[in-house]
Image (cartoon, rainbow, N blue to C red; front, side, top):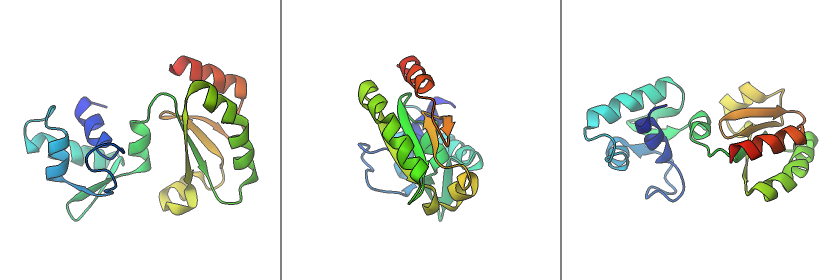
Length: 155
């Protein structure tokens, strides 16, 4: 992914002036990426590309980042756990990885797949699914020694 794409996807992160806004329009995204793209045409072309790649979705001229877009710019030690309510394997995995999260200063983001039709279709029979940064590292069960090595190498 190029720098402009990363910058546009990062506009949806907490701490960016647009905090709390799910949908951003072209002027807001252009302002956020002004240091990289001086012209709206560059931003528009990149937004179209990100929509085609499934990293953003567009509705009525506004854009929202998809879960794939969030994963694309996730930090190297960011952990994402795709889960669903009442999943005992999900709770077990979360308990198992808690010491590693603490040890490596990672952050765990839990995502309920039933709240997103795309994620439900993708992971319905696979939860729990664990990602480290943008990479899937486990489903159903986690190899803690392997995850520890991956977190060490991610630093």
